[in-house]
Length: 113
Length: 114
Image (tube, rainbow over all chains, first blue to last red; front, side, top):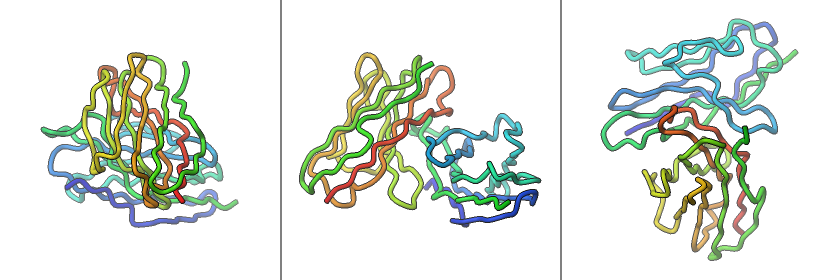
């Protein structure tokens, strides 16, 4: 069964400190992994996806198939990074609904000045 | 480019009643997915509509139903409301041809069942 686990509900760091938001997944096929972000009073939006292998707002995420992880990292956190972050998975397998997302419960990141 | 819109913003209903939520997809998108987000949880997939047909369904009972219209807007209907249906309902649009994995979310409708 598909499952996305974000072990930390809350994460606090000081400005300039490194931050890592953890995400582990289980999926029997070949998944697409994403990070979505929701800033205060804004809608859920895509932050990055693993196949694009790009850095967005200084964030990167590497898919580790051996550890089934897709942790989100930023070397120097900024106050404007404070938001709710959701890890999500979408599948390719037979019977999958193209574009259907399985979300983790989210991690609320707070960056203190 | 017009983003995804949802109406109403908030809604209060009584147990046993029926509710209809509406979603207008982003311009150029032909696919709409609906998600339920309970407090403290991530969004859960309800179903997806593509070209006016249901194109996949999550683990929700039949009293959750939907429609998609020729202009790709969509409705989510919930019959016989239960207290556990209280949640934020999100609509997301995408283009299966252009890139199904980038879902554009609406602001959500907050449903409270009393």
